[in-house]
Image (cartoon, rainbow over all chains, first blue to last red; front, side, top):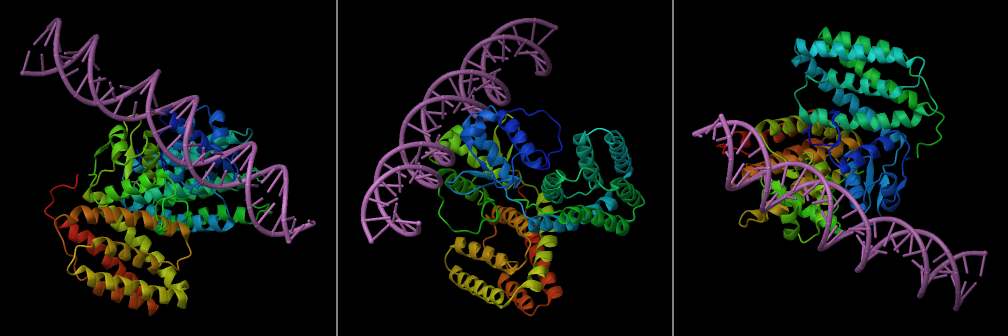
Length: 232
Length: 232
DNA sequence: CTAGTAAAAAATCTCGAGAAAAAGCATTGA
DNA sequence: TCAATGCTTTTTCTCGAGATTTTTTACTAG
């Protein structure tokens, strides 16, 4: 499933088809907020922007419905999925539940190869953080942050759990980005990550899940407290 | 989301577009096993069967990827999602976890309107069971069974939880149907449903979730024990 | 000035044909 | 007999144009 489902695709492989190119470009533009929540997605207009035919773009949009980034209403075309604080709270809540469960399983099942990969992912993330200080090269950090969280639960054997989590992660990232227009710098995420990793490697599932829950909820709180020029 | 996401759509509304018609017909044929797991879905051939154009059928297939009923591999077309005992176990496992959580929330939040709807859903299911004795009108029972489970967790406020559950339910139904070619009659599902409903209305969350977990796992066991002419 | 209706404009939905790629098949050589 | 190569057939992927439906605009009546 991981290979075939659009969401949760951690492959960096090149898009082999125009549909997939358009799919990725659209997904990126939605997550990064260039296409705002609720925006109408007019096929006739967008097909030029993305340089594909109308049918191809329609197919890409259909694919994005999987990720709940696009919605379609009968015969009234496509729209960017709307956002709301309530929705983000729901996402956070479920992410805490599912990701903690996945982490438990991962800690229980992970072998030393997993440990080493976790260390490696943390190391790459740390390097990206250092590089981030001066520049505004967020992209690399975002990607490595995603990979870190993915590796953390990689030893969890449940494909479905990881599938759902990849969707929720993507959604959460979208909210984070939407709010990021104002808030440039994150908190001391580094320390959180380090403590999390250490607890995982020490096989302390209770501590690790507590830290993870805190970590996820922190992101929600920092957005919740924003001077809400509404997300819509 | 419930209105826009293909999975978990409890609307009985008529399909307003050819894409949706094809989508529903295909979904039905996959869940009911007419299109076998792993089957290649040749657009050129299928477009005649379903009476739509090639592009339309492609779009319907793209939509089915959301539900993980269809997979697509780069430039090699579409296939019916493969099945395996391992996958069904994973589905069951996560369904137990998520549906129990949803039930807990539903019991905590549900008001008396919810209670009455639960009673009504159970009543309709019972009627369908009675009618089922002689005939082979499974469809009605299947639908009402689905609705019963849906109403059971209807008071749960989490849209995402319900969304994931609707996907898992659909997947589980597919496995149940695939195995049903041999096993015509279910066990005493009626008693299980009744006990479940009573515990829910009595607001006994622990008992209700225990019963629900048993209920879901029972389906898995009855299929696990089959003389496996492989599901592939 | 508002409400309702009807024409006009825009957008969606749908289809079939052409280009690109993959799969199948036969021939050739070791 | 087996492997490799090149050709043929099949299938997928892509596009632009036509048919419906929705939305907007303009107009008339109250």
